Image 1 (cartoon, protein in one colour):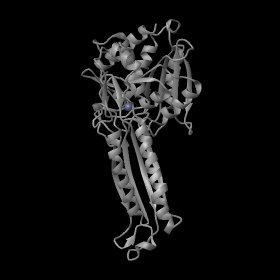
Image 2 (cartoon, protein in one colour):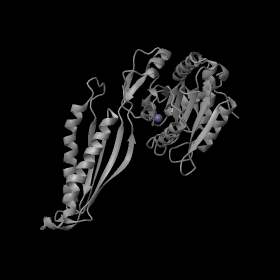
Image 3 (tube, helix red, strand yellow):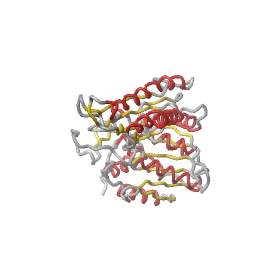
Image 4 (spheres, protein in one colour):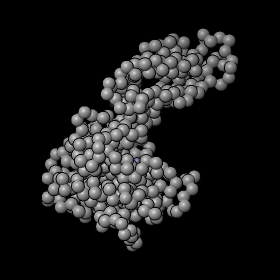
Length: 395
Ligand SMILES: [Zn+2]
């Protein structure tokens, strides 16, 4: 039983999106937990609209991506995409139950209202208005799992789409941008390098392999690469700073002053402005380890090693000279040009698939991940206008 939320200012279609959002907020899809209840509710909704639907489960079977298509069985088309997971509410002080939608002061409160179930609700509401037989191109919907923990769901789904030849001409990722058109963001890649040397007495450094000292040489090489990255920055880069950055966040290792450090770790990240920079840094570091550090370490101790763990790799969204998504969504929203944002999204994965991509969705990133997260109803309204125009454009 759904209690309709009332607001005299909003249109019927926005009201419809609001009612759907009420359902979606009721599914506590924190990244650590299953999203299957929400996915099956949405799958049934899309099937009722006549959509062709498939699910893509993760290895545990407790999470799934949902892909749905309205309109002709043809190549290309337009994709609307959002993630179903939300960040935890533990240790946050909420005025109301985060998993029950509350309305007040023209705002809709609840975990995930702006990041990003509001956009998903908008797409489900617009699906109800589509006459599939009239669509001139396919209208696709992709709803993913585990975005907040490293875009794991989208990585899997994009692989499936590639295998099926599903490459949308245009992709709109509805992360909260206050409906501004976003054409780029840096990537975010996090790594931990583990050094294993050979412990020994500090008075005889030549008899051991000092993992801490090799970690320092590793960090020095990383810092040298910064100069190369500045030189590699695209001439027209609009990012701030315009080049790919590297940050060493944590160094640890060893036990005491007079002991050769047997183990060390370096936690570092980079924020690539172009994906080729990420490849450049990774291959440079791998070569430096294989050609210089490891031979020196293993000359003393054959068991010495360096391993690199990838904590997460979120591809950037590279601003492109030609971007059909930017042109279309700017026209649909009346935006004057496009911007960049500092936060990461799944957009780069869809760009790598060959789609033209923008990020554009209702709500502000300022409200994301916080207690009393909310979405302004005006924002939902603006999103419904954009989607209505989109459907008219392809009908
Ligand atoms: Zn998000």
